[in-house]
Amino acid sequence: MVQACVEKEKLSFIRLQPFYSVKDFRCGDPDLDDFIQNRASGFQKHLLAVSYACADAETGRMLAYCSLANDKVAVGDFKDKTEFNRFRKKQGFPNEKRLKSYPAVKLCRLGVDESAKGQQIGTTVLDYIKSMFVFENKTGCRFLTVDAYLEAIPFYEKNGFRFMNVEDHDPHTRLMYYDLMDLCA
Image (cartoon, rainbow, N blue to C red):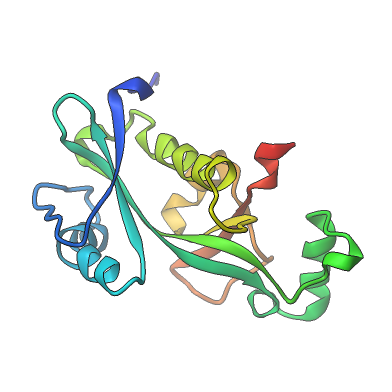
């Protein structure tokens, strides 16, 4: 099956303000729909997360959204220090950069409107986020993390995300990461 792809020039990314109201967004996941319709503005107002809309540049219709917050990759994300040290070595951190945690941004939510599914909008949103933290980064940020729903894991893997550790204890999600240095290589 060949998927249609939206031309990136026809999209705009908008940082949503706390007063912004979203009512007609439907991605098919009740939790994601509820967040953008009812809770995102409160998270933004209290400086807990920032949401961005990916909209059709001509009509202004929201095709997707994401919500981001600060995060870190730390020893506590791994079953033990040995596993964390293997992770650090795999990422190429020299010994003098052996920190107990590394800066990251958490992709808290990502939803694509049902009308835009199959058009690679989700991948476009991820590319936008990655570029934000590589080319326009205002602070240090090495990783993009996500607690991926099990059914979304293939999507994240296709977009370069890897599992943080061998197994997770959460039966509904898997902790995954994207190393932003992959874009700098």
